[in-house]
Image (tube, rainbow, N blue to C red):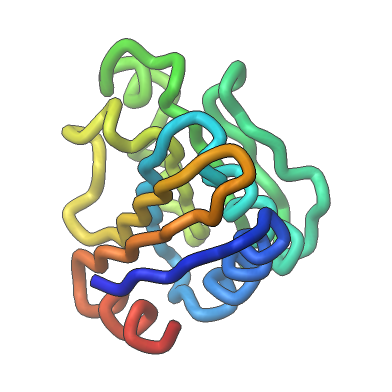
Length: 148
């Protein structure tokens, strides 16, 4: 595990930008954190680095796909009652794509998470700094976390 602190939303976005450059493709990131913890800011930074300024929280649509390089697929499980809803929209097919797949609110659908993944826990809210804990599950993610 590695812990990093971001003092501003801009720092969180910059970390997302750095992270997506380091990730192998395909990759899966499971994001954990309360409302306002910075999950979408992290993904926004990833999206900007990959080629889009359109990243927004997919809370109401569950998934946004971005034709970027690398391709970015952004899920939000906040409104889901269980993993079956995620599977009903083709989650497994998304996982099989050559893309970086990011899932916000991963704690709501633990049974849907792939065995190998990078878990990122974001702690903090409001104007306070964010603490990000990186938990790699799998060798490819261990090397990414070690290089951060």
